Image (tube, rainbow, N blue to C red):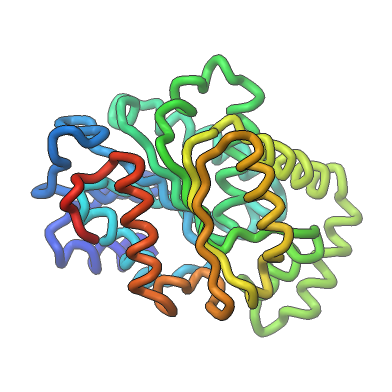
Length: 282
């Protein structure tokens, strides 16, 4: 996906750097944040983007361009279904990602997290590692200035199994769902126990930066009631939170279904974080 995505973005004069199989860095060359914005000069803000499973390059490019045009650099980290099915692997990859964010290239960057669908699980695995060694990752957690969750897969393990089946194996959704549930029950200690731990850490996240949630009432992969429980719990913890809900929309497709509302909400959120110039438009 990365090569196609890079080609799409390069049409607008942004450079592409493939850092590993699933990690690609997109860097603005001519756009700089205005003085007074977080990360001016050599410390431009960086969006950590965690796309949904099976995301098409053209779709991810649209989100990248929103940030690149505004002066952000973008680090796209793609998830693979095996990382979800065997969480220890996602923890291993999460450790490498944390090391990358601590590297000289990124160590001083203000961070914005934008996670789609099961990309929220990928980020929750990072949170597990942060919570296990808070002293080591204290500075990194403080660098996260905002967090955005789009179509977060939240609810029961059965819903999570349905989500993986529908996204990764749409032609065999029902049998894959049943196989996944059997697999989860068989390897509970290696799967369900990890999921429960990551869910608990997400609810009590060590990152308390302002958050924005995009969701809808008709999303088959995200229980809106369960998501609103998270929203209310976070607000109770003192997190400054914005929630944008549509009655009818599409899983990980809100930008396509409601482009103006999506961009306006995102733009307003970024301005509230002081991460973009006041006159910047997406």
